[in-house]
Length: 195
Image 1: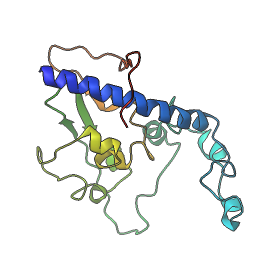
Image 2: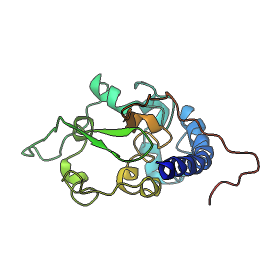
Image 3: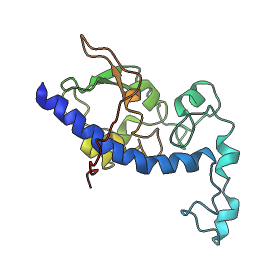
Image 4: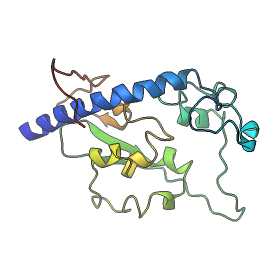
């Protein structure tokens, strides 16, 4: 148990450094920076004029306080968006309405993975079997890998809510524990964030 507590503290210190970097993206997302000024799109490219500005596209959707400032699942559930299931009309859409509990060992709260919300957007083949084996207990999940953009990090931190929102995934209290509403992160004076 002591090793898990230590690893959680080390993980939190690493997250604190990541939060500082991600906070700058969040500030930009709140204003939905213009495509001409975002540093990603080339404003001289002919297609740049055809792209919809983020403010025009996102400001009408259910707001969030982090990431790209949109609560995508709520926007889907409210009918604010209606993603195409497929470009092929004969494709059979599978919505899997079952939650999986992950991270059963460790110090952080247990992860509840909601398949329904994910399969409303994605086909099972988007994740199985190249990111995750479709078999209970067959996957070795790692926050380090996730932070490096693997496993859940393929989407979270890129197009889905960012990894700074720990308790959106770590949402089930362990027996005898109480969930805290926020993850306390404190960097001791003089500490150097990991590189």
